[in-house]
Length: 290
Image (cartoon, rainbow, N blue to C red):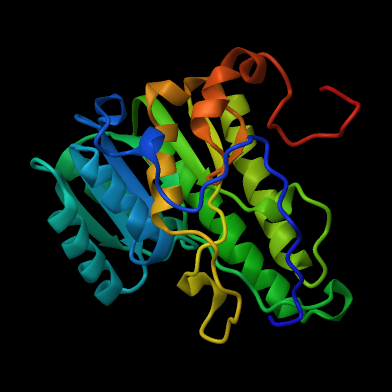
């Protein structure tokens, strides 16, 4: 991936963050997740693991993680339990999120143990080898669609069947969905765009569901693969704690919006009415406000 050229990021807010800060601090009572059941797909490593830890630190009633590898899930479960405050119930379920039967079984098992799920963090996904679209093997396209689009399709549908009365979906999207095309990343960008629109439609067709898309920043995780030389600029705790804030009442004005973890959320709050009542922070065609 050494041929990739990352653009210079343009921020929606004056403030820019690479790690946690006061507004998203787990010590703030406004971010308490007491009484909430949380489920994180891809929770065995990276951003998913950090997000599950953050919800446990916010006092969630339960935190459940899904993944394919038992060893990663067990390690993550232990870390979540050690970080939790209070009596957070931590669960893990082995499931390939690309297989609907496994997803449904995992969700049903969790609900039997802790009750309806309040917050889904749709985090499971994978990148594909970079390269020109015209030269990409057809198998790369099939795989990246399976690991990003099919996984999301299965997870959000299962969530609708097992959600509590005020369901929240925090969808981990990617900056590639809405910036100018970055050469060599076309297949992944297309898959994440499709993933994001699926969640948008879930929100449009189920208006009681509160959805927010979160670009997590540039975090070094296993998603880049063992040979990746792209190093992250941001701490995993930044998107993790951002997800907790986005699930709180303070962020209610961001329903249906796309936000970057790097942006200053305190600044976003000062523009809450403007953002809520406009097409700001939505994906569309500039000049056609619909």
